[in-house]
Amino acid sequence: MPDRFANLRLIRSLDPERDHQRILRLSSGYEFPWDYVRALEFALFKTYCVPSISGLLAETGEFERRAQKRYDDTALLMAELVDHGYDSPRGKEALRVVNRLHGRYDIANDDMKYVLSTFVYEPIDWLTRYGWRLLTEQERLAAFHFYRAVGARMAIRDVPDTYEGFRAFKRAYEQEHFVYHDTNRRIGQYTVDLFCSWYPLPKAWTSGAVRALLDDRMVRAFGFTAAPPWLGPLLRTALHLRARAVRLLPPRRTPRLTNDPDNRTYPGYPRGYRPSDLGAP
Image (cartoon, rainbow, N blue to C red; front, side, top):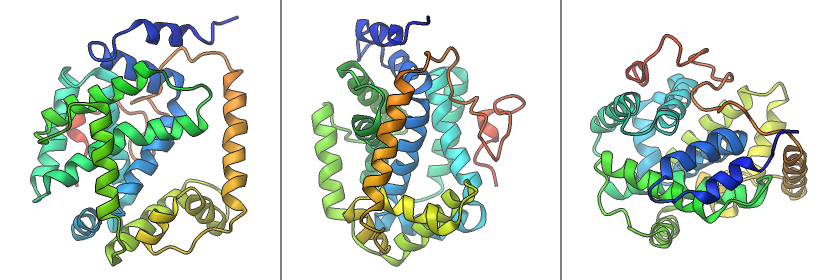
């Protein structure tokens, strides 16, 4: 029988600062690929609770015109960094694209820093609740060191130099900046509509499920109607049952990162594509 915990033992043998790229690739590509994708979807969704971020996105019109492409571009550019390494040729190419796209706009450093923090802590929080096993200290610290290195390559200033310090920044930022604004609601609704388009279910069902997974502060910042009170516990139970089932599965033999077969805008990526093709109108 394949050894379900071989990757776990390997991760525990690695140094989270020196080996952070390898650890994050093992964790997100082999151990928890589905969970990382869901967590990062909600991480991006969370950033739209900030009026300065939602306002910029509303101004670009990208969500209104091509929400799926914007989602896929963001997901693949981030996956390039994890799959190949941020200093690899493809990783450097992906970072050039990200920096070029951000360079078109006047974005506050703290807004950039906050988005970066969600890539670290939202997957950690999701996996703490719904993972098939607990994350190790190596995995948590590796995520911090990985995205701190990415932030340096994006010229994001004043990223705290400790795991606890960066989380404290994230919490304080959300406490101050999660307030209702019309653009929050617009971008939030475009995103909910995008999620609904992925599943062959009545839109009301999927929309309710998305809202049930949001915390109260996010619901208020979006101006959404809260989901029925019974729906959240039902979904969380389903996710816990899924985790138990996944724990019994054999380990993955190939990573699921840039080769995700569910990509809708770029089927078959990265075959025939380069990172520089992403993000183009």
